[in-house]
Length: 183
Image (cartoon, rainbow, N blue to C red; front, side, top):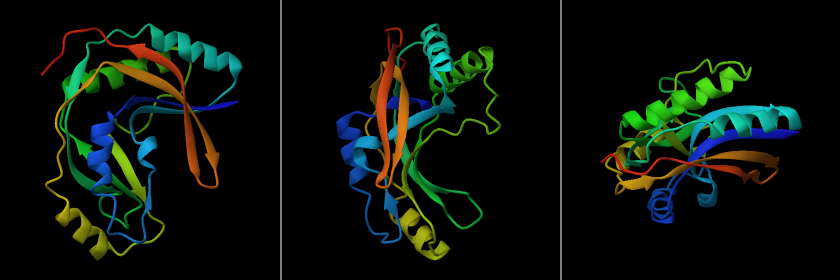
């Protein structure tokens, strides 16, 4: 059995930039920098047969390479006690199109459609309990966070194994995007 998701990876220099804001909240369980990624679609559990169908279906997706810029920080849920701390992504129509194609591909082979709309972000920490004031102070302090633009030339199918120390991700398949950057 596989626990799967589809994602875009981040270059090392972007991960290092994010590492620079991963402090100052003792209540936070910071995501290991090696595990940082942009989830296009969480799939969940899949047996061998479904795993093979997913790999094959995603290989049919055609989309152009593009660039991304990370900017800003925020929390989920937005108006309740924070549970997730994230870094935002500047709007990118090609990214939105790619996520939509991934969704259509997976629904096309029989998976349930995702109920939440795609909200591109990089999860950097999780909380069990944090005061809204502490979270607000962190967000204000890091509100100007921004990375340089970086190219996205492929996306990946990952499996995820949950361990007591957090999830361990393994790349199962790589899907190249068409050349020609959109800047």
